[in-house]
Amino acid sequence: MHRSITALTFSVLILSVFTDASCHKASLNNAQNGNWVQAAAIGNYPRGGAACFVVGNKAFVGLGYNEAVGGTGRLNDFWSFSLDSGWKQVQDFPGAARSNAASFSLGGYGYVGTGTIDKIGALKDFYRYDTAADEWKPRADFPGAARWDAVGFAVQGKGYIGTGKGQFWQNDFYQYNPDDNSWDRTPGTTGNFSKRQGAVSFVYNDKAYVVTGSNNGIMVRDFWSFDPSQSTPWTQLGNITNTDASTIDDGYTDIVRENGSVFINNGKAFLTLGRNGTMVTSTWMYDFEHLQWTRRTAFPRSPRFSAVAFTIGGKSFIGTGDAGSSTFDDFNMFVPDVVFNPND
Image (cartoon, rainbow, N blue to C red):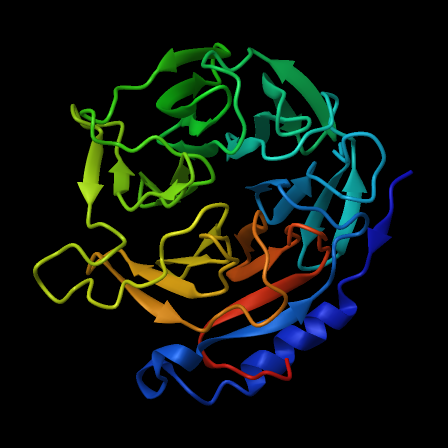
């Protein structure tokens, strides 16, 4: 049965944030730059390791792990979220219930594949979701090794899935062509790209970016951009630890993490949550123009990893997640360049 949750109280919160927004970026220090506002929780089942994609003005969130569910604790339900109508349950995912899958949106469809049923059994099946018909269809299996904690993104008309953990840690990428439902191996990274699981990826101005994650329990520090139109598509950017002789990265103390969450807002990328031996709540903003990370207001709610994040209608949200012994269903909206208010 489909369920829906209205977004009325959520809309009131949005209005209160912007009417109180008397501060601006220049007047804020990094520790209070950006406000976190409580938003509507997902309709059912707290979860960590969910999949998420955005099509049009709706976000879609589903799958994941809940410690209280029987069997492996994996879920196969899916939900849509819009600013107008809140959360609404959509068609269940048809494949095996799973967590830590990779996902992306492309050509008006959502795509989900790979993942794990129990952090032992890795998967490589792949599905397309038609948002208009509320219908899932199987597509060609991901051709690489079965894995979980991979990243997925779409850029320049193609979809990509890469990195992750299965039998081994991986740094390979494969390109999906929706026109003929086929996969091809993507050119590599000159041998320097660290194998990793639990990385994040984001897309801005027709380039994809991959950063964070861990390799055999060690947090990786290399950061890469990907432009498939170039003969050498991968470009290494500055490390996310203090390794440069200049002062640009002197404050890079806790960007490294695995199973973090990232979103784009107003031409900047924001990375938050995750774990690096302990759970991390620090938030960092990446400036594409100046190629630099700066600290922003830390996530103020319960620490967690494997949360989902998305931006719709110019508003960015982060929610769900895993704390190891419990999972979450709450969501929060992040408002950049507004003074932090602990009461929101």
